Length: 440
Image (cartoon, rainbow, N blue to C red; front, side):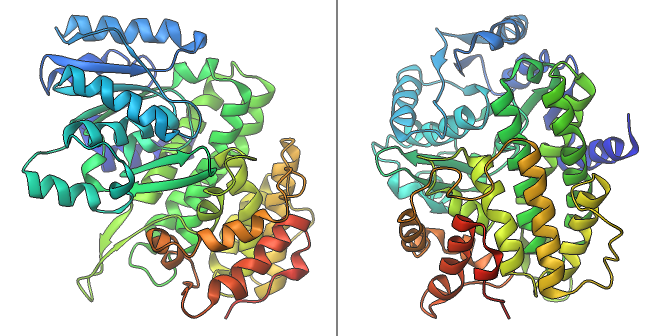
């Protein structure tokens, strides 16, 4: 195992302790974890054929620990459509389980998180729970804790098996909404990296890009925060592991070492968006979080998968926020240079502001292009009028957190979304970096 992978393991161990089992041959931990919460569980899982052998191992583990379950409930489609959330919630409500075992990628686990809320609090509408801390408010009011979820991750990517986030999509409008709440963090999780050997190539690619976006977006929003050095280490290791190993996993899908590296790296992406630290000088608790790339991806579900949407948008935001994130651009730029996506002998300490930001953005774009991904919204088939949809959606008060997480926080009332976000999206549509205004 490479030194960076060992460091990644150490970071994850320090973060999650004994409540997270990852690596090789760890599916037998599912039954052990589930039995902590009682004898009755609901098993929610995808129906993918490649998952069947691993699902059998999970079922055997549940039986070995005397955990009972009924016929497995079908998981969610990509992007966790809210109709799937309601269907899963109904199945949970009928069973009244002690816990839920969610086996799948980010979409299924996100859907189960939301469905568990509806089932526990006998709600028929998920809308009131979007935003930050709304589940906790209901939990405290009713005196009912959330149903424990044992999240069994099957693909390197979102890190949702470790986080407080649940992304749910309105498939008609093509817009994602977000639940952010400590109450929906799975109290136990399992990720056996063997399972990812069977993951379709598209899912492998999308997950890797999502992992980069998590690390990158939290890092660029960390200037002046007490966790800056911590997220810097997470970002350096996470992005480097993905940039090195994602192409290898694509070229040789049975490369287990590359799969392990991607699993560790994308888990670090989950760590990044969960980072929480109290400022020793002010006593204020500061939290990491994604920002511009993720915010834009929520309105692109009709055209791009989440990971690809973030990969298209983030290089342009690297330029938009260039003045505020020079240290971050130097760190990440050096990673892409070492991997061959930025040519020449670059002196990162001498590059500044716009020139530095454009150099990094071009390296990120070159990486996406090497994977066969679109690098502009136009290439991805997004209609130009969607820019206006994205701009107006960003003004939704429920998404204020994303605006505040930005390196240069945007204020809707001040007009920042119109003066900075709109031209940045226009640049992302055309590929013309010159359209992006310099932020202060």
